[in-house]
Length: 317
Image 1 (tube, helix red, strand yellow):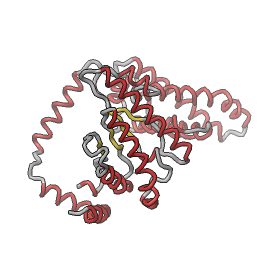
Image 2 (image 1 turned 60 degrees about the vertical axis):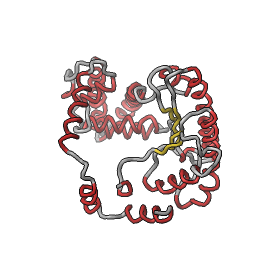
Image 3 (image 1 turned 120 degrees about the horizontal axis):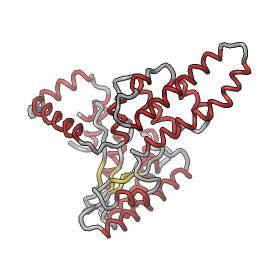
């Protein structure tokens, strides 16, 4: 199938009826053995549960999964709170996610002191939030003002600090140097730079410089290692402010060249570079960039270019 035919097929699959696609997938994959998958999955889960070297995050997930309101509330806070720039929005989301939950039911359910201390703190925070809500209907509004001045900033900063502690389990270092210090001599890693999509050219310049620095630092580290080779992962939406199918002509002109230069630098350092997954609407344009990069003779024999794809969506059948 030609490239044009392939991209046409992607567009057709994007809005296809899911039940029909699932039926076709099941019929076309006769190698699927449900019992084998179930057996292997059980072994993996059992091995994880036997592992006594649990991190604080592991303990948290064991107590607060995504099957209860409290677990979902915590995941929402962890995902959003540290990204919110203004205090009022922080207060609003804390009130929404903390209030009305059954935190005390989780107290002493975990052997982890960290989890139990956090659970108790969330319970206390809930009482403050509920108290504040009850005062809202009280005509003595000056009491509410006192509560807001004393309680909200303390509550906000305490919960933010808790989320920062949890986020440390996801982030290996505040910069590439600290990440390499933490994991540089251990299991091979693929390092990426956490951040949002670029909105301005200054955002692009910041992330592009960060990627160049990361490639250089990882290359220097790899040169010192005999059996551990680290890689780099980049997010295309971080190095172009209009990474969108509606701007394909501009993207293919500007972003392609920036990505190519990062690939050249990675190839020179013999580092594998993975283009990170984006939203489904960007899959086609991501594939087109990969296709064009694969034609560049300077990196044709490199063999280190990869593409991460989210394993959902009709187009991935």
